Length: 243
Image (cartoon, rainbow, N blue to C red; front, side):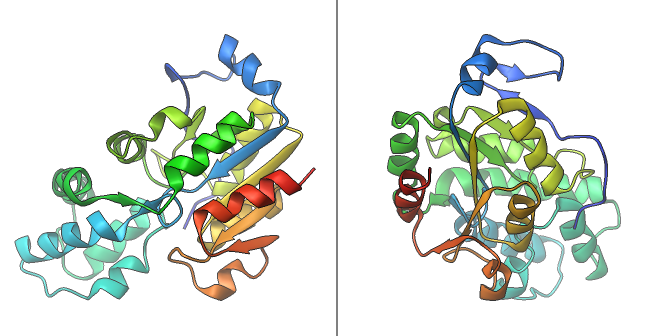
């Protein structure tokens, strides 16, 4: 859960971080596009359970703490990392969140590389959206290291024009989406995600909201969405048919 702040998270355009006042040729190119598609990462593009569950089973074992079960761990997917760490500390993990986070990251990097999977047809769908001339952005509560590693190892990083990540845990998702829209100035914005904060962020910014029913959110979290889809590739028809 996010704490309110007026500061936006790190925005990365192709080639590195962009300061708000820094002109870039590719920014001007993106601004000319009519449609912007913003994607959540975990439970939307990436099957987080394929790497995160093996990671957390090992973490619990290393720290000699009884495992709470896969369902309990996955219920925290999509929340901020500080919320997740606080949840672990309540169970008896070391109270230094930095040390705990670093060990989780060390294990997770290997799990992502060896076991991580995208949802079906993610690569093909993103490729189609780019060919249609859409701008493509990521907006995640994860940090830059995690997001770029997942996208890079799974071979889809090149599809993205912009990455909006949450490295300092001090922005709500609605502010992150607002920042993307202000930077790119599309005529129509779509946001696809599997949790309540994705849908809330889209509604707050007048986006076409698309709930990913195949992800980790409960059905009631997606009820306010404009559309709900059962597979990632269903997004194509929504984007194509929306003026």
